[in-house]
Every structure is written in C-alpha cells, then in structure tokens.
Image 1: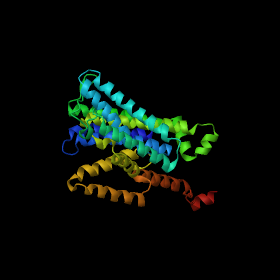
Image 2 (image 1 turned 90 degrees about the vertical axis):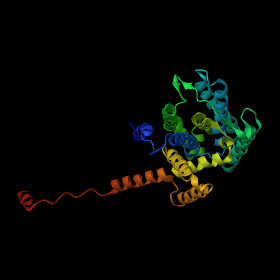
Image 3 (image 1 turned 45 degrees about the horizontal axis):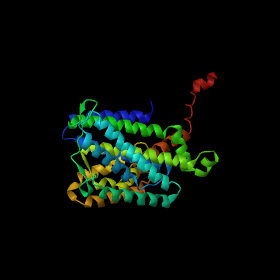
Length: 333
C-alpha cells in the first residue's frame, strides 16, 4: 500500500466523522472543499503533470453544472435522473474541452493560454445569452433527486455521497498520474522534443490530457451543482479560472495532495473571512505573494522538498565508527 493511499485513507476516515461533530466543522464547508479540491486536481493534471497553463477550466466546471442542473430540473424525479444528468454534465465538459483543446493545443506558452482564455469567454457569453441557463440569474433550486435508492434531499446522505464521489474522482486522477500514460505526459512536460524523438505524438497526448482534465473539472462542476442546488455565472467566469490557478500554486504544482490543500486554504479563507467583505481578496492575494516569494513549491511541495533533503543528508552522513576495543581485548588479540 503506497504512502499516498494511506494518507488518503486517513483523510477519508476523518471526513466520515464530520457529521458527528457539529459546531467544530460544518459538512457543507467540507463538501465545498471537496468540490473545489477535485476542480484543482483537474487543473493540476494539466499544469503540474503536462505543463500546460489553461484559463478555460471555469468553462468546464460551469458547462457541466449547467447541463446537470438543467436536466435535473426537468428529469430529476426519475429514478435514473441523477446518474444520467451527472454523466451528461461530465460528457458536456469533456466535449467543450475537446473543442477548446483541439483549437489551442497547436500553440505553445502564452499563446496557448490566451486562446483558452478567449474561448472560455465565449462560453461565458453563451451562458449569459441562452435561456435554459437562466442568464444572469443562473439555475436555482436544482433538485438533488436520488442515487440508487438513496434520497439525496437529506444533507447527511448528500454528504456521504459527495465523499464517495470525491474519493472516486481523486483516486482516478492519482491512477492517471501514476499510469504509463501519466509518465508519458510528464516526459512531454520535461522535454517535449525528446519525447517526440522517441516516437510519441506530443500533441495527441496533450489533447488527451486536456480532455481528461476537462472531464474531471466537469465531474467537480456537476457535483457542485447538486450539492449547492445552484449554478451561477460565477461558475463560468474568469475569476473562477484564476482562482483554481491560485489553489494549485498555493498547495503545490505537480503534487497529488497539493491541490486539495490549496483548495482548503482558499475556501477556508473565503468562508471564515467573509465578514470583511471584498478585503478577503486582498488577504488571499497577499498570501499568494508570500507563497510565490518564499514558498515557490507550495505548501505540500515545500514539505516534500524538505523531507527529500533530510533523506539525502541521512544517506550522506558517514557511518558511525566502531567503538574502540578495550585494552583487554587488544591484549588478547
């Protein structure tokens, strides 16, 4: 059993006890962290393990939320309404990701980022114009329905279903990263020319990574729509796309748990500093500046770096000299 899996089991065990400790931490807050944690994991799959900076992830989060919400409003009472709407939301995000990635993937660096930004703004414009999205009002009062006989109208039931779906999504991302496919993505990130010389189609792998990242972001968006029973324009806005960048950088780019830590930090600051209004953005910005200036690897990245340095020092430490022989032993010899 890997260390990552052990840590994940401990976190899940702690999360199972949250509904039984009211007043200490609220289940709704934890569900929000899980949704945005998955969202950050999706972005990290693209930035941390493929080396692509995208400003279109809000388009994937929001498009999945809108499709899931609209289908739940219409077919939510059907026994298969929730699973079908959830799957449709993920498929919609993946299709949007394929469309945006197919146009942007042939460019590099800042040009790639700007193309994703421009195309995500088109998605935002469509969300404002389409009637079925609710325009500026968004989709409100989305029914949760039921999942295989479980009534999701209960907040406690919804919490445990969210935890199960979060665990499945996180383990999926972890499996992708540690699979041969994930190793190829990291090879493309580190040295694309060498990967191409070895026979790998770099653009094809980057497009697959883009679509996978979009699908996981849609997974988070569909889950968020059901948890909060709301989808708004903020879900497809540029602010959300930049926020997920902040979460990933704060937690640690290219680490497994970094996005979760970053999401918990940002959501926690927004939640507990809500009384200061818009100043919370200033506080988060200052924390980001400090992190980039002094902890460039992020919280988890710096921790792993320090642990690695300690291990290297331990291996370089000279072996202890044997204890000197006693006089008696020396004479006997």
